[in-house]
Length: 494
Image 1 (cartoon, rainbow, N blue to C red):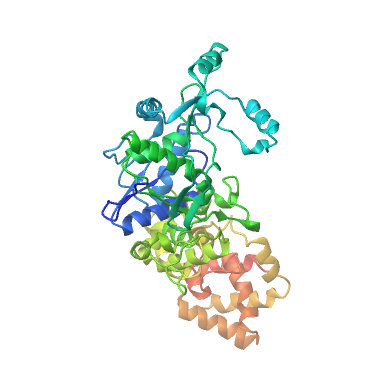
Image 2 (image 1 turned 45 degrees about the horizontal axis):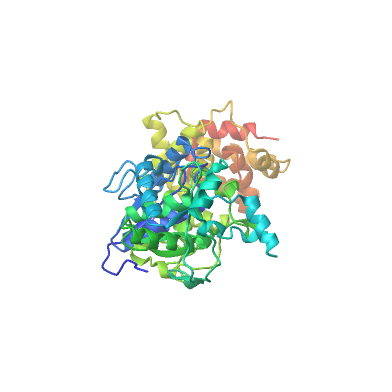
């Protein structure tokens, strides 16, 4: 079996089907292929496998492009970029498949198969075998007369690949040496009776024609590898392929209860994380940890650092579990690492989406966000949290009300003396600055009422900001302003 040598330029590929919403496991596959290509100075080919008209959609295709653009995962060949081996959508490559099918058939690599599933099952049972063993290679040696008789009955054959009568082995880049015994893999159907090629043919054919050197994919596709290797060998014999690519099968991403994270699982929807305010840096960092690590004692890194360190042989073969709490913690680290101006620019869309700012915020509104942003940035996990923390500044007084849970905890009967003392202290304040507000409230509540800080300031915080968790209190009151602060404190009196 001929494989690419060390001097062959690396060409990896990401080849999703455009069905549904981009899935975190799918994007993890894209990330590992991207990092592998970049680490090795190679190219990443982005190919769309859209031959299933019943399931594929243009909406899903656009969503894939949107997902990769949002994350900053670029590609060297493919849609919107072009390349020497296009088109990069399988639905546009029918003529190429037809030519390859012709070559394989004329060379005897494919043969006509007329057996129905029911006939195969009956033959297995008659031989005392398990029907689940599948196709029994019965049609391999039909004579011309037998094929003609079957056609005369109105039967249309599928085309099957003749599997070699030997074990098929290969060295998986992640799992090491793997071998499939002779006879364990039935001859697969590559072309339907109506002449349409199946995924089992078009995927390896495209890899061959695009000179893909490394196929890095999920472990769920491992059982199909011997069929693909056999097809690559056949493609080499008919002059279509130069080599059989190297394979690496990555661990599946699992969810709660260690079950495979399916497309239907809400936890798998990539865009749900974007809507919550995950930043691309945080999302990619966490996805990278689903099967790989940069070091045993390090979880936070940039994509440039990942590219420098990424080696496919260091990817784990063990299942990777999606841990939302860890994903959030890593995202929070990347949010805190943003430059202040970048944090503001990324937060503004969430304030607009929440209805707190107009589509075109005024200079004064942006200045307010600039002022509060450094205090919020240190306290949020996702960007949507920032909108909630800043809500108190942009909510009109006739619409403002503390959150019910927060009010219940902090604004009961015991809050009245605290609020009364706070109002009195703040009403007489000479200048409305953070130091002056801090000094006045501490004097009134801690020194004057003898309260501990938590008891003293919780009612003031909830009355003014509506939340038990907010940016620093004194700075928040300065930004809110004297009149709005006092209005809210008075409204909160029990």
